[in-house]
Length: 339
Image (cartoon, rainbow, N blue to C red; front, top):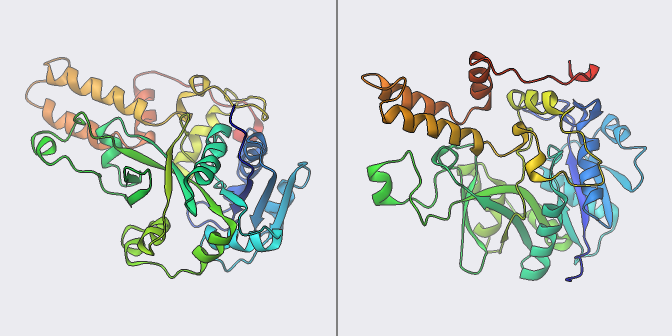
């Protein structure tokens, strides 16, 4: 059995998040979001777990958790990478220490995935590593909020983009509603590992042209000529909770998702809202095929309805509202904090 790679985890948690202010302290199952994330890091077996924040209220949320330390960082940092670089200096990590950047909005990150990104960094010799998982439906590929990546035969990242990559010219000229075989599309998972020395260098790099175009900070690294190793996630990574419209799903599901924080929930046992949204999109695709075959809703206006379904497939809120119209009621969390 291969020995586990030694690593530390740093969780950047800014209180004044632009899309969801106060996000680290939003309650999930009656406890702050950042507390759930810290527990995931501990469950992965990190040598050290640090919370990098600029607000004492966020620091207080993990004050009673054994094994979690706090780095009070500047409120002026423009990105989580800059905050982590300061955390590494405060922690005194040597240049070769493997630092895993676990985003503060990933309360269901699998422990195996946290370990895998550290292993990928150590095995590749690259200064930075990340994870990806296969894209299995066209709606995900065309969703600009889903970052795609392409990698070289060596496993290093070639490019990250919000656009559909790679582009199968002939197949998509005929039909863009389904993925042709052999595309091997990948969805980027926003977890990173760095050598602590490279983390300092990364934070000092000026933003690159491609980074500004795509609004993707990680593009700064390959544009500056450095490698990013990419490994496949060992199990599904539930989406993070980044925007107000996505926050209602984990709150409603928190009672059903309760599990021992020290163990990983089995992927098959996660609530439907915590699984990749491709499952819901497959249901839309099935309805699409029924319409095309002349089933209910087909006929003269069927094409317009199919197009509307595909456009809406990327919205979890649309599917929840559609389920309610069909009479499918989902039980709500009974915790007072979630009502």
